[in-house]
Structure formats: C-alpha cells, structure tokens
Amino acid sequence: MPIAEDVNLESMADRMHGFVGADISALCKEAAMRALRRYLPDMASEDEIPKEVIDKMLVVGSDFEDALKEIEPSSMREVLVEVPHVTWNDLGGLGTLKQELIEAIEWPLMRPEKFRQMGIRPPRGILLYGPPGTGKTMIAQAVANETNANFISVRGPQMLSKWVGESEKAIREIFRKARQVSPAIIFFDELDAIAPMRGLEESSHVMERVVNQLLAELDGLDSLKDVVVIAATNRPDILDPALLRSGRFDRLLLIGPPDKLGRYEILKIHAKRIPNSEDVNLEELAELTEGYVGSDLDSLCCEAAMLAMRENLDRVDMSHYLEALKKVRPSVEESMVSYYERISERFKGGVKIEPSSLIGYR
Image 1 (cartoon, rainbow, N blue to C red):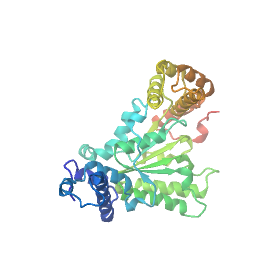
Image 2: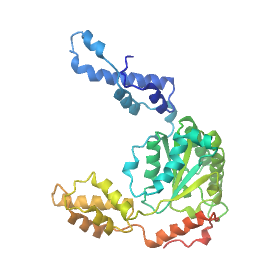
Image 3: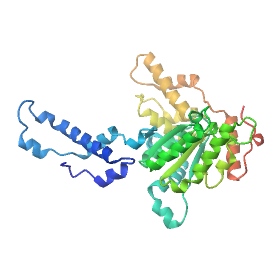
Image 4: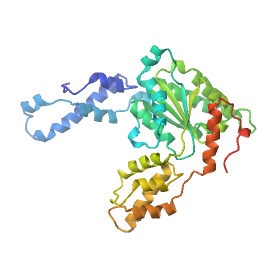
C-alpha cells in the first residue's frame, strides 16, 4: 500500500486498542477506499486510468483517521466502548480541581514510568460526588478523550438483575473487557444504586453480592494495567465505607457549584454556539446566576435563544437572558451545598461515614 509521509504507523498502533489482525486489515482497506474516492474525479468512467494518476495515488493520514472512526475492533463489540469527543475546553468552572483530575487520572495513563521511577502507586479509583448538574459525567469523558483511552460507561441501575448471579457477572464482564481494550476508563454513574452500605435493613442480598464483587475487582486492579475506575454519585453518604478506604477509591473529589469566575467560563463556552448580540454582558450574567450549576446555565442559554426565536430574531439580546432568568431558577439550594460540604469535611478527616450521622438536605 503506497502511504504518504504524514502517516505515522507507530502513533496509529498506540491508538488501536483492542484491534486484532482482521481488524487492522479492514482498517487498511477502508483507508485505501477513502483514498480512492479522493482520486475518482481524476478518472474517466470509461477510459483506462492514466498512469500519472496511479503513480500519484497515496493513502494519507486523514484517510487512516477517518477509517479509525468507522472500524470497530471486534473485542469492543460486546459492550459499549467509546472515545468521547468532550475536551477540557468544553468544561468550565473547575478551577484547581482540573489539576487534581489530571494528576489522578491522566498521569497514571500517560506517564506510568514516572510513577515507577518515584516508587509510588497511582490511584486505583476516583470518586466524583456533588449535586446534580455539575458536570461529573462530562469530566470523566474529557479525561478519557485527553488520554485517548477507551471509555466504558456503566449506569448503576442497569447493572441490577432479578436473576441470581447476573449482576455480579456483569461487573466481572466489565472489568474483563477493560483489560482487553486498555488503556481504558471505567465510569460508574450513580454508584450509590449498586453499592449502598451493606448490613442496612433496606439493603438486599443482591446489593451485598454486587458490592463484594466490586471490591474484589478493585482489589485486583494490580492485574488491570492501564485501567482507571471513575465513579460519580449524588449520595456519597450511603456508599459502603469499604469502597472509600485507601487502595480502592483513593481520591474523593467534591464537584460543587461553580463560583462567579467558573460561571463566566461556562457562559463563554455556551456563547460560542449561540449568536449573541453585542449588548450581551456575560460578566453581568455570571454575577446574576449565583447558585446556578452547569446544567442550569445551559438551560438559561437555551431559554434565551428560544425567546429570540419566538420574536423571529437572528441574535440573542441581553433582554432575552434577563427574561430567561425569571423562568430558569437554580436547581441547587444552599442547604444542599452545605450538605455536601459537611460530607467533604468528614472525608478529609478520614471519618467513617454513617447515614445517621448526617442530616440530609430538605
């Protein structure tokens, strides 16, 4: 196959996680077909292809890039594995938390030799907790994108089955698949749905077996090279304490509502896709949206755009945003914020969390 100089086969190999020989063959054929389509305008439908056209035919890097988006490795077809398109540029309001996430997740996957050199073990798991709408899922997707890792997303309630042993089997299968397609990030959304504290009256035997299986897999992460586990929850106080000890979910990160600067950054991101008028003052909007989380700000921008559409306007004015503020209210109350802050303080002190020891928000 004639390939151009811009094709870096070594870099391609690093990104072809889970590819077997047949998959690589299919990838090359797809890249060649894409290259051929580029040269079709130079070929007459009935005449013989000119020699000069054949001589200049090359498969370029963009052909392989496009083919990579189409060819799915056979080892990834049993579960949903993806590389998300979310980047750090799509997220705002993280502040110093972004650096903590990079150190806890990106560094172990991209610079493992540094950890070996310093003689330290990278975090096995990272728990993101906080009120709804603060972007916990998008954070996990951005990390997977920045590291070129495969992203296995698991929603907690979907793991539960009425058949004995099926839920535990599903947990084992996810970790087995992660080994095959590493480097990979396993993301458990709504972790509290499958890992509540054992021994409670409301806790079922199914839940306890799922927690035991999850603990067994986390304890066996030494064999899971280049695999990071991230979990998100709105109820960290009801999680089984065994999950939160060192060696399992090592990093417990509170994702709270953004401050004024964070809200301004989020509004700037949304402003890129919305045709705003020159009178729109994002700094003023950031000042007026105290208590709003990322999803609230997204709803605010959408509502303002809808108001402009109803008036048959091509641009969104500041008046539309001010009117939208009357309809879109913050979803996170002050009592909810203090609830998570109390949990954060207890986590920092290494105190065992008991549901009865925390007064939930109303």
